[in-house]
Length: 372
Image (cartoon, rainbow, N blue to C red; front, side, top):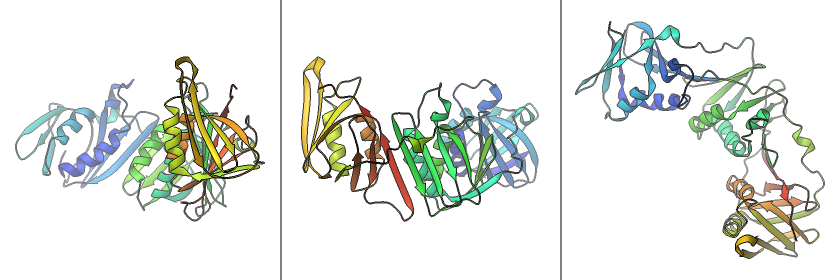
């Protein structure tokens, strides 16, 4: 088995696949990339048993074979090469020899047969989404998903496909984000929960990409195919909470404010907040928003006034400043609207502008109790 490939082209593909490999794997074979060669097509795969990703590369070769190559060693070596053709030759003594313009390097390889096979999806349902739309949907929601191992369903992003549109939801019970597109729809209704790791990988690869992504899924797995890459992952098992029930429908108090001003203000004031609750207090009266925080243990306090446009009763409500900053950071709008009903009911944050046609985003943040 022998092939020739460009060093930078190979490195670029392997770095993407390398994101799948865990630092401490239960099976030693998972520390490797699987190289499968068929004439001038090399398929490289990486897996952590839950997620498997593979890419097809064009190489110069007329042989066939499958071997597992140590990922870390190969990546570290490739990073040091300038652009040049590299020749890989599999030797009899269980090593693969890599020749560059200046030298030769031998890596021990394992048998390709030992590498776990990717799951095959039988008669899956499918939907096609543009890469950029998918990447945006992931980045707008993934930050709101939880990290609680006891509630695995909340540690992923909920995909909801219908003939009218597609919706992505993430929540950790303190904050919730619902992102929907009416300009993209699926052929039939379906829903599943995607784990974070494969989503982060997809987000990184697909940002700004105009390629179409074919999403195929059944009850236990989902498969994403685009260009020469394929990602298959196991879905999170369980029923997603009824998020619509949590979103308050009647919110008579509406505040509209400049997003970046509001964000900078919350950031500054929160430096003075209590280090465990991160609580900031919003006091709204007329066209004035007063943002304050206090850390009684250290006699630290801060207060800022902003002008806003407000319709509703005067009110005071407390929020965790970290959730507010995260949410405001994830919106591209110039102005945002905060809708509230009572100090103990969730606040709803939506962008006033900056959305594409057919794009909708709703962020919900639970208040924290104010101690007067």
